[in-house]
Image 1 (tube, one colour):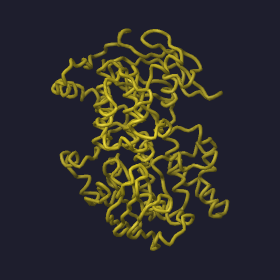
Image 2: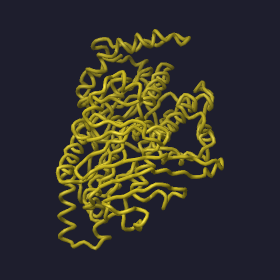
Image 3: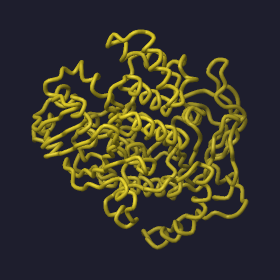
Image 4: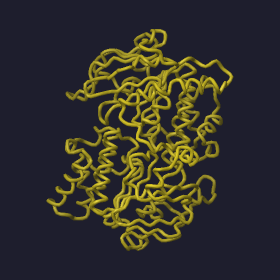
Length: 509
């Protein structure tokens, strides 16, 4: 169904004038009813490969393409871009870039309408796709009212509703909660059984255990390793780490992360002490049933509520975010996590309740000045023409690090003069975290900071957040990433439809 032979792609950088080899002699063969997993570090060429499979490279990305891409026996070089949708459907790394309509129902029908399908067929395909992705209850909702995770599910449903025999999904679970990931897995299983050819680019690998028929590892634009699914998921920890891959084991639901956080406490503390970085480490141990003292609490909210018109998002929330600690906020897609952090940092006004900074009631303006925010959609906060310039926006000597050092810390040192929008998704993510670090502000809030991030850079992000917390900042992280939470969280709060689950919250002081 998919046949790629000796595929290479290169282009001339507008910034440097140098030729960049994005793909080099890539071969890929995938049969109907199979699932191919493509993995590798951020910036290794995975997304470029997916764009080549859709015809976007080179038709929408100028450059030189050599080799052959055949889908369902047709050479993509001979297929008009407007007709590629008959052959394959795509889920982009940032699903917001592929929406055109107002409501979920309209978006699901968009592709079929463009191809002149009958209304009854459109309705049947849309309803089936919505059911598979668990979004039937969202059909009449406007896209602008949905969370990032809900939008990701809509994008997947749109791809399924297209009726194309090939599904190409680039990081389809990056913003999804564990339950939603399970729904994606179930949907992929059904689609395989129905004969679809599926290619998935992912950093979160565990959910494809038992589904992936072949796995390809990409490095510097090349496919350097190949496994069948069974071989790959039987890989030992040492080999996995040597290849820079993320965990192959399911971290489980958020209620189990607390135990993982607690279990890892002594190990993390010992490792931090062992490093002896030249400063006295702040004690962040977890003592049983100890509450944060007023002097420790940097940010707190009491009776916090928020609603969109007559529709409440959360009500009566009480929570503390201590200085020197990393507090992770988990919860299902659409439960209000992003809205909560927007309220905390002053970008939105609560319907009721109070927010204090260092024990003093704080206005929205005060909170905006005190908080550095890393948004879920990183493209919304990239403003400069270069990476180096991006770090000067809001930079402060309080950060204690130069822009050059920050770029080096996040493995971006050689990209200082690149335009931020030319980066891969994972590279953009690291850049905005570096920019937040550069502000030196006492509160750092991050919304899904490990989206599109590989194993090595997950470790660097974890280390950086640890350093920020140890220097006295309150770090607040919205995450669905259990692997990340278990590695860095001092405290875990679960936001539910009925409020905050603070079970064991005070244990990580």
